[in-house]
Image (cartoon, rainbow, N blue to C red; front, side):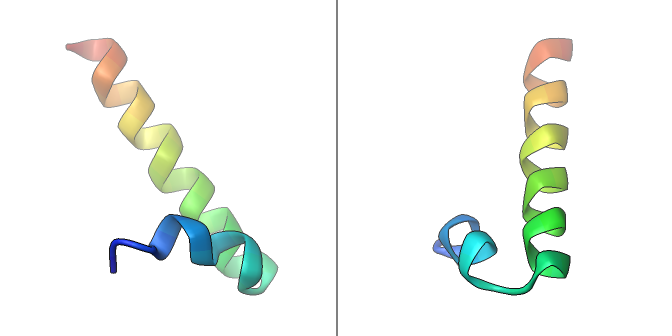
Length: 33
């Protein structure tokens, strides 16, 4: 599960988008803090 971010680029576009969304959400949460 930890390597999910790295798998994003290797997996199909669907997975990549999901990874991007997760990263974006994390950044937004960090900015809100």
